[in-house]
Length: 393
Image (spheres, rainbow, N blue to C red):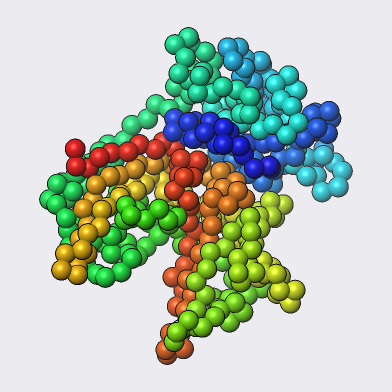
């Protein structure tokens, strides 16, 4: 899929803020003429993870075609449609999808949004439709009705944790527990009476806590996940370090960021293979090529486990007599991520991977990652909704 425009990104942010889970597809000129579209990896993931349809379980041929009710949205009216999900008899039976009437609203290479709600698909042209105007319109319209119905939710535990955070913030600056980048999180968890989280589970009754210094605009940690060594050509972090590491002072390390949109100075890049549903790390060294693999299902599961609900807590950092103190001041509250957009954000370079591998003086290899991180500007592309609270007010 092509890169999204700034206007298209703004529309997605508005929808995800209203707790709308969606996926995107880009019809081609050939696809519109033939009334056929490839069900891309992100579309297949969306369908499977929302228990709508699983192409892996679908047989080939017209007799196995699945039809689902669909509604196409224009400004103030809708078009009744039918979604056809099938795998043709030819070749490998590559997954296909089509919405009757789509040619009435879509041109080649425009972006079409796909929502599933109340046993139906809800389709609209993201590129053309003025989403903000429709949602803010005083005149009732079909899109506004749909989004309003989807966005109704409430949570008690979130308000409980928010009250605890306000109590901590109200006590003033708190002395850092340790002199380390991670101290902002460890100090807060201790102040809240939460055990330091070394597990893969969320920190507080299903809510994950992520703390950061307000002076930093760096990418935010999503989760750590090692590759699937059984599927990878390399079988350990030590092999990665030996192949791409470098000497810094007394250490032999590999501290680098890897992206799907460019190669880094070590010649590393990420690639999504939607056919086999894997994220692959590749080297430009011809003797190495693809060397480690993450099944997309594993990454999706980790994201959902870790970030079903998350408080991103911002702290102001000050130093008193050489010791760091934290004043926790703001919190951004996100809920269940839109998993299908995880793949898209990797492809667009908003989610990247950090290697943090080092061989210590005893020869032991230590791996603190690999860490999957997201750019702050993309949080509201992945997480609905995004609500901010001032802890000091």
